[in-house]
Length: 468
Image 1: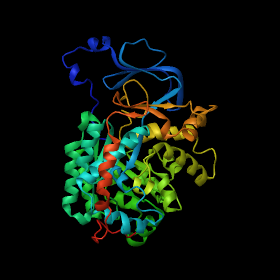
Image 2: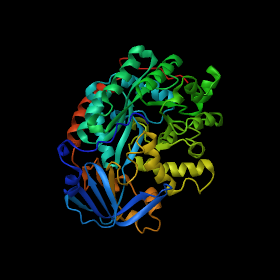
Image 3: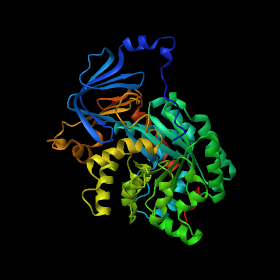
Image 4: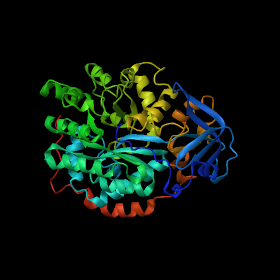
């Protein structure tokens, strides 16, 4: 997608040095002895045994047989799988502060009775603490990049810059906020894109067709085209939303997006479990510029009767990335679980145990997810020239042994807690399960002190009305 800034060819320390000097200098990082998850020219998953990965200036320089390259830092990864870092393609990171607050409720009550009243209390500090806790959880679970769509996003951008993750960020807005909401979203996207040394990309972030008017959606599409910005929003989240849209407007949510011109932008749609067959030709026409993020755990919790139609979307050429949604609905930011659930639920919904296979699930977790957030040429695979976003997964535990099919072991046996090391842009953010950039106990202490004020609903306010 067009928001991705050009890759940095060198770091500030390299200015004034020649390419030959840099090539002869020690590599920044060499990982040895691992099994590397790579992709062949047809994007099939290939595992390289006893591989070494050389990283220089935040970029993968080589993946292959044992390297004798001198390095500033070396990691012995015997017994571990090196794979591209996971991408959480749609979440609301600060909502970890609401984890477990709104349980066993239908969608309308979840929004109107709990979540939107509580969100009317949100302060910048609440958002910052939630973002810090969420980033810690994602780093520990092997997530190296996340797409977020929330409020006070300049605070989230600052947390991303500090903790070392990669992120695709948008400032959410509703039409009830007036034109100021849309303007704030655009101002945020323009000011922060390319931030954190290129690790931050940005998007315009209208909440959804049911909370943003047709006029505001059309204005968003114009802004996106004028400034080369992608758009990230919720649409066709569930079947009821699509039925209500048809009854009120004579069009599906996807058709409303098309009429507004949003299908002519770089568009990331969250959920899409209400996508109809009639929507597929519209999505296919976009030629892969429209992507969908699926977060299956939340659909199960809400008892939605349908799930994201991954098979039909793939046939239409629409990238489908894996996501968790916010922890207020999903209870975790575990993309590893999303990968396993996507495979299992697709088998059930299609009535076909041959779909989604473990290798297909890994493809969605890597390249498909990278494409969904517009970074398919930069992350999502271990290959020379790609950013060094790498996780090391320990498969020596009893629950992952023996290994007959490595892809199946990764998808259906491994867990987020098996991630030992997380690396973004060549920087180690977690080593041997120890977080290096965030202080979780301090975050939790302050967040717990603030929770009584945050969750107080006696003020009688809510930020929006859910009525679909």
